[in-house]
Structure formats: structure tokens, C-alpha cells
Length: 124
Figure 1 (cartoon, rainbow, N blue to C red):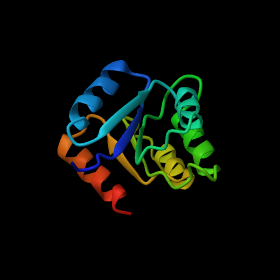
Figure 2 (figure 1 turned 45 degrees about the horizontal axis):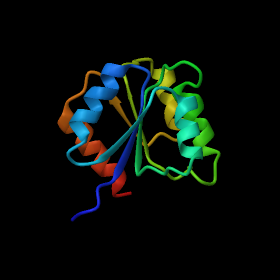
Figure 3 (figure 1 turned 120 degrees about the vertical axis):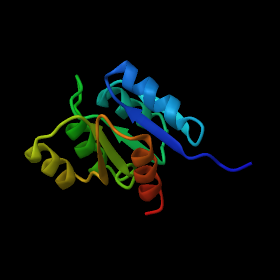
């Protein structure tokens, strides 16, 4: 049996977590967290996903702050991160790339685009 890669979905919107989980669960093992703070705690418990799908606007620890924290960490800095968000502000997108996001998918998204971007970062 082929090993399934693990995807961590970090999004405060439950319907988005469920949608992404349903779309991706046939190809990947899925873990979900509802904000950056919970995701940091999940990582701190020894979980290392193969890729993280990250929302931007979340309570307690935003996507950019979460990204900054993991990129500063020796344990998590190399985990690929794809931002999945409806933001359109160029300034915010530029900051996310400066903080180390690997790619960006704009909501609403095409499932084929999401799968392609995940596979691309997994082969880095």
C-alpha cells in the first residue's frame, strides 16, 4: 500500500475545513485546526505534516503570524505552505511570499488547481 502524505488544513471556517478535507482525503491523510494557535500546539505535539494549507484571516494567531513562527523554527521551517484565501490585497500577498509561503490559491478555487499546487510543493 502506498504511503499517503499528510496535509494540515488551518482555517477558522468550518465549512472550508470540511470542503478541503473531503476533496483531499482520497489522496492524502488530513488533519485540521481552526486557527494558527491550535495548529502550533498540534505541531508542538510532534506532528509534522507534508504540506500545510493556511488561511490568512483567523482569530488568535493569523496566517501571516503562524507562517512567521514556523519559518523561524528549526523543526518546521521546511514544511511547504500553501495559502488558501480570498484576500486580494497585493500588499498582503507580497508579505506572505516574503514570510515564506510556497504558493497561493485564491478562494473560490478549482479543485484541479489546488491538487496541482499541492503536488508541485510536495516534489520540491
